[in-house]
Image (cartoon, rainbow, N blue to C red):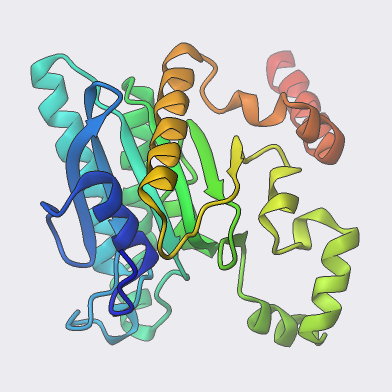
Length: 271
């Protein structure tokens, strides 16, 4: 499965859903998962994309709209069939595509369309699970993965969740990369490790002992089992995303966020 000409996200899409994928910059396929059909979606490199800044596995103008299309197509089909298939967002996105044309043509609208589609699917009863297999960076992760009922990740080199890459963060903060790593040991939100991200209460499971680039059949089967379990959890949990602030880790590391929400709710209800 180790193909150096494509991305982790595309390789995991084929591993979990087979070779009958559709699309170019956004690839997707319907495949069995725990006795039912699920839609698997990923953002992949597109070397011939007409927008030069969006030829890698990033979320640009076309990627945002294509993500929304892939999700809303599943919503529409299932509304007619009165089913609610699981949607698995395979996350391997380096960033959103920055550029003059992207800004002028409304990349914010393209990314928002993807966010809205995933949120609409979740609210309509589709269990949405995000599987992080590579970087989940910045607005790209917000557009593809962050609206999921459950978020799981491979505990492997190259997987991370953050607002920006280390080199960019070092330039902005005028620190060295080494200094940022040291700071991340003390301040959890600044860390680039998946284990630290899990402490924020946003990650539902960290899957260890999996080769992210060339997994064995047994490792793929184990990841599939985790996805199936998270789909069942999502169907049983009617609280939406509230569980992200209810876990022990969140209660400890996000106490201020929880307190702010409580105070806002009191003021809102008072009016």
